[in-house]
Length: 99
Image 1 (cartoon, rainbow, N blue to C red):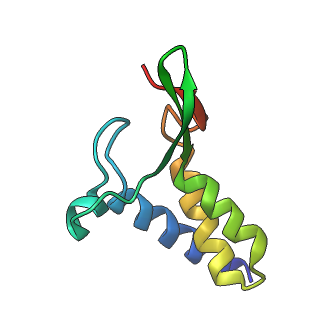
Image 2: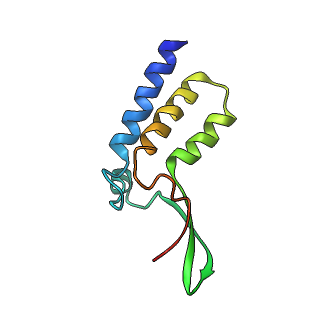
């Protein structure tokens, strides 16, 4: 069990490290590979003539998948990807007003 958790987490972390943006504000590498934007950002309204943005970071949707599955390798992969996503300085910017 610990081997599956360790290996799966490392693979998840490395996968998201290689496919995600190298830093905040830079496009994802994965986007360049497939040719379109994969970031989940929804503009949900206006406040003072500016848009309110809901940004579903990869750590957040991986957490959802982790909670919904019981298969340990998938849980481990998601956990590794979540840890990688939490290394960004904007990890907590889920709902914000666009400048």
